[in-house]
Length: 127
Image (cartoon, rainbow, N blue to C red; front, side, top):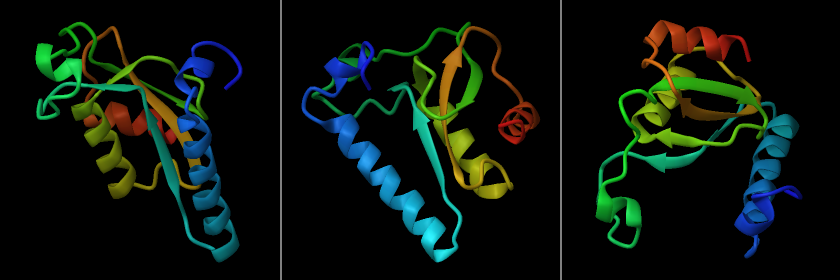
């Protein structure tokens, strides 16, 4: 949180609060013996466009068709944007499969074709 752009993003302590929450979840899971997964998406893009206070709603910002590939990485190292549909797919894969158990990871969309469900599973399994 010390390198750009995180000091700006954490100006009001939001990132610190998220970290405290994540630490509480993972610590409780370890202490009590249950599994957890923390998914960290980038800035969310794509519909539904129902939040009238966000400029992405006003302009219906979305990733172009060439930015559909999915990148995942352990921890909080990836920067970028994440389509809501990608986050939904990742969340479903984590819940349905035995992927990314007892860990945290980031997910962003990058240039490339949208991966198949099997490709997403392979990337999650490699974490």
